Image (cartoon, rainbow, N blue to C red; front, side):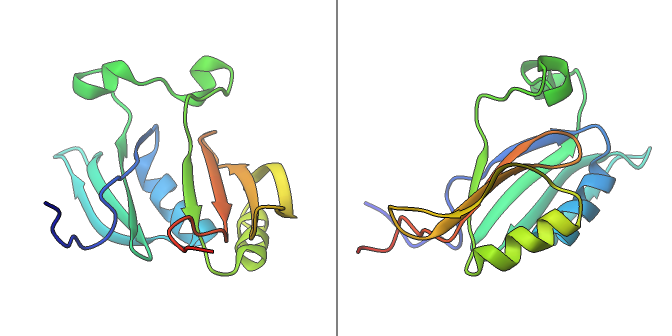
Amino acid sequence: MTTHVRGSTIIPCMRYRNAHAAIDWLCKAFGFEKHAVYEDDQGRVVHAQLTLGAGMVMLSDASPDGFGQYLAQPDEVQGRETQCAAVTVADCRAHYERAKAAGAVIFDEYAEKEYGGAGYGCRDPEGHLWWFGSYDPWQVP
């Protein structure tokens, strides 16, 4: 039995060395909005939620303890990742231009895709991979 849920039921979680700077950049470059940001007594981000449409990413400052012991930052593994967030956007061309103007490192240039829609891939300032596209897999052709 499924129940109606608000937003996505799968939420990527990421760690950043400077979560405050990452939050500001992700909002500026990708159009995310702050949903919640929680800090510890030293002002480090222990948990943040950013939204884009019905989707969300969660992030915090990187730390070697707790869950962080299982994660590596991109610069610790020669920029490689085992996954990336894929985000559906309405106007992919405009999103690409916005991200590029904000300094996103484009590794897969904007292109119209044969399966429908358009897309591009980029890295944020700390090297995390992102894929943005207008193809919506929830829409039945």
